[in-house]
Image (cartoon, rainbow, N blue to C red):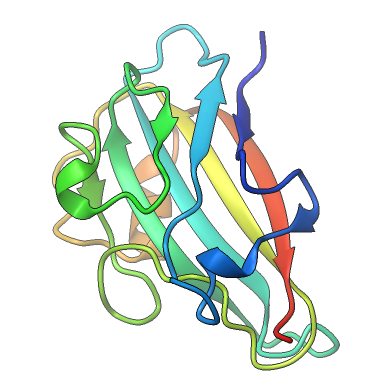
Length: 157
């Protein structure tokens, strides 16, 4: 069975409900995964938006959430998960608001895509002291067993 990531809030390439955005409660979506490859020692999750600020003329990828060292015994993350509720051992990185935690979709213009990227790693990473996405990606190099992407979209009313 291959690595898979799903959400009960939206389907792949489907619309993310307003509840999970800056126009709603700005809470994290529920996520579930399965099919971890043999040898998985930890998981990492990066949620980002490659369409910022305007999908017609993207200039940067905006990072919404960075988690790593999620234990392979965890089967997912519940809706509106708070830092103290993350699976034991999970560490947080910085999003592009320069804080830890989830920051929901809040596109200034157009319909944006939000990539929920799950990585199965063959190691438990050292404490990277609140890394940004690039620092986490560098630390994961050579340790990625498998990767899966779940994409949701959102456009403000």
